[in-house]
Image (cartoon, rainbow, N blue to C red):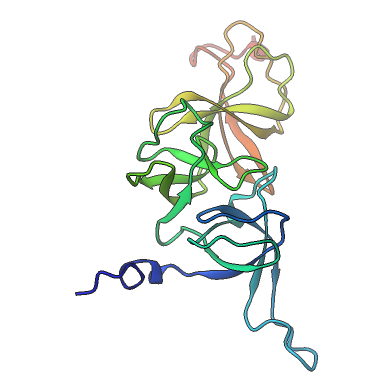
Length: 230
């Protein structure tokens, strides 16, 4: 019976080749974003690449969760090549930034996490992935892709919550507000959270190329009419 990691698990991950198109060295188990795909071009006399290659950048807002990949255990210098994959079929190890996050504590099973703009590492309670395993070194977590809906709160005591607003994300699975805010678009009518009886609770997800609020309940009393209906 083999005990080699490559034979047991890692070889099952569908790795893809990427080229580091940033000016920084990408550390092992980093989160990158596919800025472009480079495909073999057989229309000419030569083939420029033998297989599809991801041109990798650093995540920046708006961060598309469907374009996020996690690298393997090799650091990659600028313009060099490495391997990456999306943890959709198998969990992958990813670096975690414990200097920021919901409670500046250790991750828990089922907690969401994702990269913040300008970071290669994951932050607890940001959207994109879900924690499915915690190694002894808690600066790393095993994650799976998570592109479902998320819970959050609209900004408190704010008269204008239309357009791009900083939504307070929730600690999952506890369902309590975190210390992380994330830019989310509110395409609906303004909800003035300075008014009495306003419930800032909202649900958001990735819609049409941006993070967008898909539902919100401005009423503190679910059985009472909303302020605009009185």
